Length: 593
Image (cartoon, rainbow, N blue to C red; front, side, top):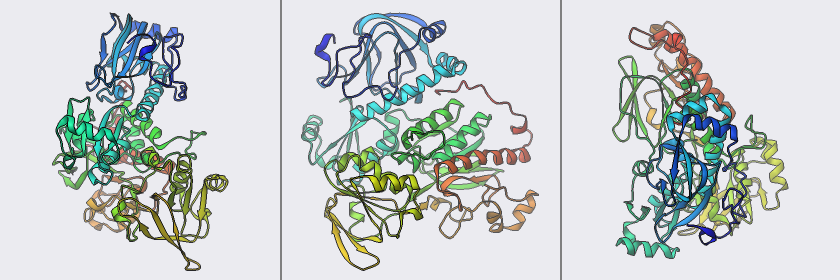
């Protein structure tokens, strides 16, 4: 692994640090910063120096890494499929660079191998030593965070990580691909129908097409149609914690409201557990770009906003588990127990429900059989990459639809926006309307409703009707993206908590009115603003009746909910419990936990 022979296509000659830098990929993510002399000196005070020889493996793909390395002299190569015929050089780090990406911070296994290329010396720090240092040095901490976020984005874009082999028409293939994409896990999909590599891999492992989908990693690990939980364990996502006493708060849902609540609760000293059924970020996590989020004048993707929230919550000690599908909530000896699909139960003093809402399904002939293959309810890179040569349509008139249109127009040659109403301004922000009206590849059709999807295995066209004239038309598109309102994720709470007519959780005075009057009389108080019909159970974000369906308002409600949690806990504190009125905030040493 020396010289230009190992340099992948599209890379330049090594820079002054001996690093191969892709021509097409300048470091726009801030993924490869060089540490300053002062930062190196501070790291050296806590770490230990270690001599390394060419070929020494520092991090091995598929194994958990708990060590932070800084290159002092020599160079370290980042390689995928190390030691196999498919070995691929991703990057070379020279002096002043550090080794690691988002998996290091999350405790996941590595998606690459770090091997010494040129002999020299590295600085070695344990994760505890790194946590202690960045707690005292926010500049260094932010530098590491930004770099790790950028490196994960690059890994995802390069198709590194595990491989999913399966048919595009298989529901389980779609499930695994969605789980990997929503959780921003580096992976590559190999299409059973069109990719020649699929047949070769199946022969290698002696498996028939009927046994797919498969997950293959490093040619040594093979999972046959794994559950989401099995895939999560493979790459090191933490399981549900074993019950040890009662936590202060259990947050169900990890969209903007849930993550904001986790940050505020954990930073104020509450023992905090967050559980999520599919992926952190919720609906917002699937947004291609959010331009009206306070504090991000140049916009931010839902994925990046989510990762920042997850890392910030972890910084203060919140524990986040994915996937964990809640199935039941019930009172238990003055606390609350939440049961999960795998049979696990967690008991906490308070519960915050931030399960959000999912986009409403489009009911028209032909739609159901195409869902997941060419009819989608999110617009991420995962879906957009399938639309590079074909026209697509987006259904909806709100901000989510507008953001999806602009994102997809960067991939597809033509994007149709189909809106039932007479004017985009009814539900969409002006900044989105202006961009849509100016975009040369976007065509807006108002007063338009989808009546039928045409295509057996993939979408070929949609039939639409003009609601004013009754005139029918057919639009040739290969994918349909649906953003037509939302239904709350509250089926599992029906009969337990008060819901409004559409299934959203009632809170405050409305929840109290729907409750048994004696319940609140026994509390000696009224229902708090974000409290549901059960004392100590709160709701925030899109799942709450009457909430404003915006990222900023969800973040605000998540933070505000913790204020009410403190008020509730201060009233119910008893001997042996933790009185939140006297708690002190912990040091931020849980960062990177």
